Image 1 (cartoon, helix red, strand yellow):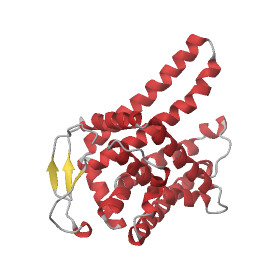
Image 2: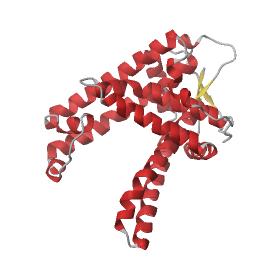
Image 3: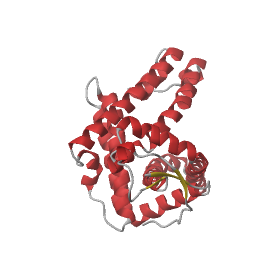
Length: 277
């Protein structure tokens, strides 16, 4: 495979393709996203290891949503079983995905451990275990610092794992190498990913403004609170649908070349056609 370098405007194309593909199969994609959320929520209920288990499952379940997007982009109806595609691809790749999940859980928990050194674990406990957030807690300088440090450290962690599940599943890349390839692809296509992130942020903010304006026009402030949750879920489902296209356009398969385990990421440039298929 080769690394494909795309122009910054491709970030907009990724957002459009995600929304378009979601609208082609809205029931399937929204249903799979709700199953994705439910699976992770159920994992957190496991005593003692719930939070770590949910984190470890995240790469595999995210891959399931990407596989569903791939099917939907071909005009097919993705079935619920596609969500566990990572565990149905043979023992070798299943073990690789489990290892990738373990690495993600370790990385995230280490990140939370660093934040605990700042505020005594308040932010980490709230995020991992849950609980009631209070105004006094938010106003504490230690809590705020822990939150910002966590966000800053999570960015490189997310880039390491952004393409990693797909590389492991579809290209047979080893977990450690997939992290390196993912980071390099995100770095080389940083402009497109930045535009992609900014556009999604703008869409989320616009949706909040629209819901708030509708509530104001109706004279019912409660409407905003009731409508925001399902709107946010649909927006998140669209966002996760679009992730597949960031991977698809970042790597080019080589018809004849080294095996995935030793493949070299050679830069290549290609204009994104914008086609869903």
